[in-house]
Image (cartoon, rainbow, N blue to C red; front, side):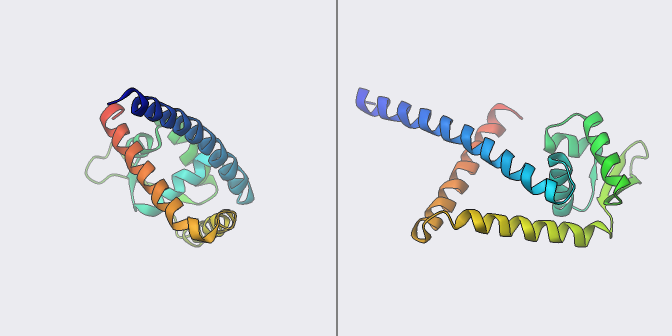
Amino acid sequence: MTKEKKEKRLAQAAKLAQLTFLLARACEDKEQYFTKLFGLTNAEFRCMRFLDCECLFSVKELAKIMGLTSGRITQIITSLEKKNYISREIDLNDRRNIKVRLTETAQPFIKQVIEQHVLLHEKVLEHIPLEARDSVLVAIEELLNSLTAWSRNHIN
């Protein structure tokens, strides 16, 4: 690799580092605004989104995919349980484990939350020129795939 190519690669890496830092912060702000509209914390919202994708999770599984301790997950579950959005069940295969699922009350609520979440992102897209949107989405998908692969190799 030539010195010029190496310098360009380093400059691109620095720009990517800055942009992903700022993107993460902007996403946090967006999620905080959004979750307040529905009386949820960011953690409660994320937990419900994971539970909406999969029917049943153990506390241990939720802790792993959310990157939180089992104790913190238990607090989130307790809060969502008080709101009647999730229920706990004893794992029939291992009675020591508790499984968590969305309640029937939560189903229309999470559907509305997701619909509003999509509408919020539609408004975000309005600030991107129409002809650039597909390229932006492809780039974000590529970035996510790259970050996921890096995480699998370095974190998990």
